[in-house]
Image (cartoon, rainbow, N blue to C red):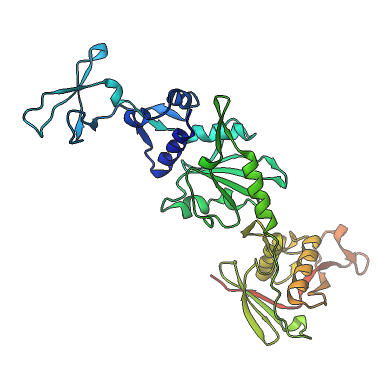
Length: 369
């Protein structure tokens, strides 16, 4: 089978939602190509064509076909309305045959070829499939097949897909070539460049995927651009105002004020700069609650380990050695508080409880939407 036939199918499927090939196109393929692709399930019989290019003369007119009779006696006829001297033209019924491309079945085949389940998971209807999570040299990857990468709605249907955006290491196979920056931080490869036909079956060049992953990893070393904090600035003169969308901040340290992104602060994943790490989400929670206390359920979900990670990030970014947080312990009276978590002030009289947590030394707020 010719790989060009497969690439033609992929290009057609990516060109429009109605991916149909006619008998004239299929007739140009090497012998056995149609049977092989049909056996794989990539092509399936579609409704017969209702109009074809008329073979009666050199004018190449697109003419409607009229079916006369039925069953084994059926005949396909074209009646020319352009020339008076043209008799009715009979065309072979095989010329009316058409095949549509089944991209879902292609996704299933690729999933099995690449070590995934027999059924790919459709995460965006007719547009995006999760083929599996195979292990590569650098760890697990999320492997996707995308259709319509060049369509006008690809930014909202594919690039903004929640399942795709949560990946830290994603490889997206496309049916046609795409721009290199179509999905920032992700590896995008054209399936037409990876497809192979070996031993009478479809296969994929995994080595090319590994090479591209290694190449991206080699250049993904991030250099964090530290904030130009004036020497001697204490944390009390630092202010972080997070935007309403929660994806950037206005930062002040001493006399310097600059806009800052989570990526610049090292709080996004190297291979997916659009995905925030737990450090940034911790900062967002702090901006909402002001401090971490054992009394606030949402703030209480922030663990001491997460606080320590955030401390290291902030110290490194601002270049201030002192602890950016102060720990506190407050005693509150509450007669109804449970005894196992309380201290008795006087036996049988009143109970008091200890409330602990962390509070930032710097000003931290968030603009309301």
